[in-house]
Image (cartoon, rainbow, N blue to C red):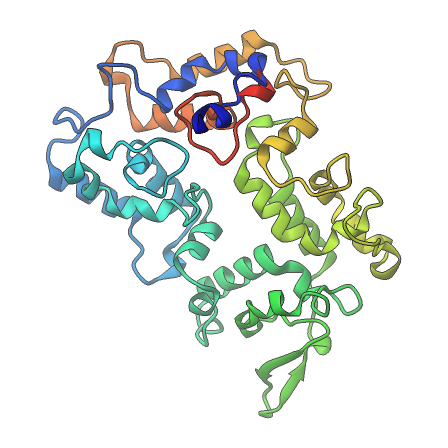
Length: 365
């Protein structure tokens, strides 16, 4: 069956067994389904207000902050399953009811069109506002708007604004031009021509503008791609972000077989700024596309990274401490759900009802 094909427990049994309590996040045990309760929120009005206060930002992208995203997740964690495009868990709308789900309607902004959770301010801004909405003529009058615009541009198209001779603009012009509104900040397409008017009403050349500094590039790559020895940070969101940043520089690495090397063209120093991107190249010289592929490439099959000392017992304790509530309904809080999600995120694919494009049970075991 489709679910059986998606399930990963058979591939990584050792990796899955320690995460058994995480199953509560996928299929609540009989009798403990998360349903609307007067003991949790006394009235519908209170529920609606709590969601509004945590999640609402209207048409103002500057209100989309990391704090807002965190608070909104805290309120919405148990009801993201209400939305049909949320692929990380089976739908609960039939169980909790349309009326209950409607109280959490603002929470749908935390789910992308692909059904994946939005976990950062940058991603929420992109999910709700296109770049033209963020990067308007007002960016130079509003520091918060300027920072939001520039942050999105660097996150999504950093190589387009690289220094002349190193930019990907010439080879990826159509892709870069999707973010042309970024030039309303001090970012300019290197190799292209800016559409910004200068103080004399003329056209400024992109090559005359300040490119991204090496430390900015390095930070962007680090923020998008780094997970260190923490396997729980290897998510589909990380893989997607890392690909967005690394796309034009995978050619720096000898192991990449899908394109000729560009190291001699862009230079050793430039390629070194993108060194973390090499994790996106598999042993056959192709690209790593899913978090499961990256997890298997970087960590042992038992779910413990090379050189790590974490034992199954330590994993089980961490999962237990984050997720256990036994039959005590009063312990099922937003904080518990968020903590349990953080610990379990990389192993929800172990459970039959966890709907993902690909599964890891057969791999992690």
